[in-house]
Length: 295
Ligand SMILES: *[C@@H]1O[C@H](CO)[C@@H](O)[C@H](O)[C@H]1NC(C)=O
Image 1 (cartoon, rainbow, N blue to C red):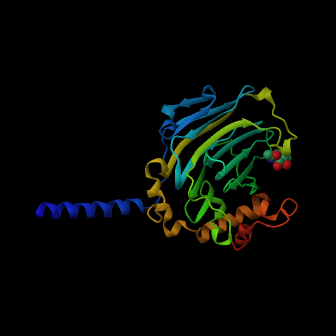
Image 2: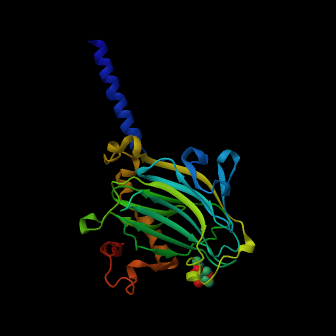
Image 3: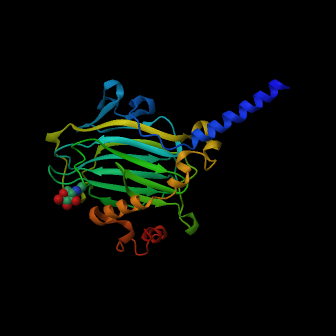
C-alpha cells in the first residue's frame, strides 16, 4: 500500500515537473553542430564543415548550388539559424531559409535573400503558403549588410501566429485568421530547409542583373543550428495538444507593444513590396490583410 502511494506521488510529481518544463520560457538559441539537426539535401560536395560542424559553408558555382534539411519534421516551435550571406557581387544568387511540409497542398514559411551587385542592397523576400497557396510576398531591405557578419533569422510558429524575426526584430506576422476563412498551417509537420542557388532569371532587379561567374564560387556561411520544436514523427498526437509548450503561452500568442513598434519601424522604413497593397496583381485584397491593418 505504502509503496503504491509513493509511486503515485512520484508520478504526479514528475508529471508536474514535465508540464512546468514544457511551459518554461524559450531557451536562448544555442550553437549546435550542423549534424545534430540537419543533413545535406543535394550536392553534398558543395558543403564544407568547420569546427566540428558548428559552422558550415554552402558553395555555388556554375555546376551546382547546394542545400540541406532538418532530420526531423516539426509541428510548431521556434527555429533559428545564423547566416552570413554571399559577399561582394552576389547578384543573381538566392539564399533561402524556409520551413515546408512535404505534400501537394503544402504549407511553407519562407525567407529568401536576393543578392545584388557589390555595394547594392540585398532584398529579403518572405512568403507564407497555406494548403498549397502562396502569393503572399513581402519584400524589405535590411538595416545592415547581411554579408558582413552573422545575423540570426528565425521563425516562431504556434496556433496563434507565425512571426518572422531578423535578430530580435519581428519583420512580419501572419496571424491565424481561420475565423475569417484563411487557412492556417496547423496540422502538417514541416521540415526546415536552407539552400543557395542561381536564380538570375528573376532575383536581382527582376532578372536584369545576371550572375557573374567570374566571382564563383559564391559562399554563404551558417552557424547556430537551433531547433526547438515539437518533433512530429514521435509525438504526432502530442504535438496537436495545444497549450503545453513555451511557444503556446500567452506572451507568444501576440507581439507585445515594443515588438509592434519595431514591426511598424520595418514597415515604414524598409518595406519595398507588400502583396496586401498590390492592387494590380490582386484586385481584391486577401482577407488576412485587413487584419494586418489593425497593427
Ligand atoms: C539591387 O540594387 C538595385 C539598385 O540599387 C535595387 O533597385 C534593387 O532593389 C536591389 N536588390 C535586388 C535584389 O534587386
